[in-house]
Image (tube, rainbow, N blue to C red; front, side, top):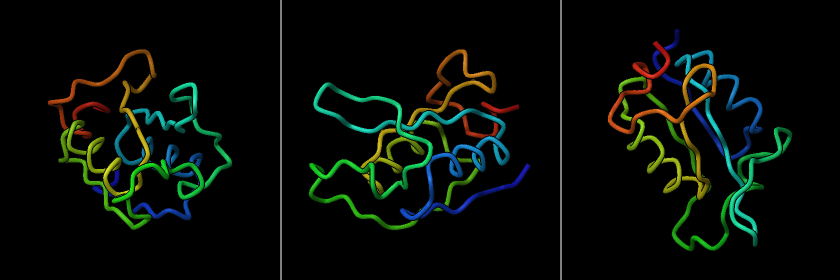
Length: 108
C-alpha cells in the first residue's frame, strides 16, 4: 500500500475514494452539505464543486494524506482545507473507524 496520496480540488470524489482505498485499505465516505443536512456526494463531482461555501476561511487547496495521520486529524484537516466532511470507515464499510487510530491501522 502507498504511504501517502495527494488530493486537490479538481479531483473527482470517485477517484479520491478509490485512491484512499488503494493506499490505506479503509473506506472513505464523502459528504456534500445540503439544506437538509449532509448526504453522500456524487461520485462524478469534483471536490471543489461540493465544498461547503458557508465556510469563509475554507481554501480549495491541496493536501497530502499520510497513513500515519490519525482518523480525527485527517477528517479535521480535510474539512479545514476543502470544506468537505469525510468519515473513515472499516475496509468493508460496515462501521466508522476509531478516531484515535491511524489511517494505516484502520485498513490493516
